[in-house]
Each structure stands twice: as C-alpha cells, then as structure tokens.
Length: 168
Image (cartoon, rainbow, N blue to C red):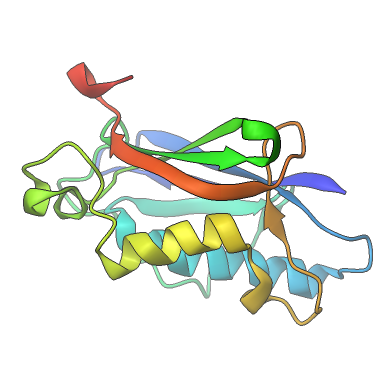
C-alpha cells in the first residue's frame, strides 16, 4: 500500500516546510510499527538540519513529544535546503528536499554546493532512502521509500544546495 511519511520543519522565524517521503508497506504492519518507523526516519534526518520538528506522520500525524528535537537553531531557515536526488526502478528520478539543512554537511565544511556524502549523517540518510526503514520495524517486511508512482528507489544520484541561485 503506497503512502507518505512526512516531517514538518520550522526555522527560527517559525516558517515551515514539509519533507515528504513516499513509501510502500504491507497491510500486515500495525500502527506502533509505523509510528516507530516515522521516529526512526526522524533520527536519521534530524542530524542533517538545524530547524525544529513541528509534526510528522504517515498521512496522519504522530505525537512528537518523545522525539529528540528541542528547538530550531537561531540560524535555521526553511528556505535553505538540500536536495537529494535518487534513481528508482525504471530509471525514474525521485527528489527529496530537507529544509533548514545544516550547511557544514555540504562539501568543504559548508563552502561547497554539493552534499558531502562522506559525512556519517548523510550516509545514514542515503541508506534510509535506498534500503528503507526496515531496521525500525518489528515486522520482517521493510517500509521502502518509493516514487510518487510507487517505483522502488534503488540508488543515490546526487545531493546539492537548493536555494537562491543554486536551485536546479
């Protein structure tokens, strides 16, 4: 069953942006497993951004009271994004943007325009997107990110700045 995991992020001015990750899961998964998968995804995304989590869920909101995320950094801005590009089955492309992206996760400790894939937090996010949320689930069936047309994501293509003159 295709659905979407979403994370609403706010910056220091409380401007908001939504990260949406389409996923496919089996009908045998139950609510607690799905909520844990959302939290697991947040644990991977959170180190990459300096905004604060406002809400999240799988086409429904999940209580975020116990998630690790206190407040947006004073320098956070939802307009400052990183765009991650993935290839899916059939050669299709899926783009995921992370608002309030921490600039030091770009090459050159923030001086470059490409996402630094050697950073462990970035590598963890790419693994989540390609391999799925399987480690988060009690079920043996993975919760796999997919395109909007339900094609499985198979590989990372690139990551880059996605604001101002750097939008592609």
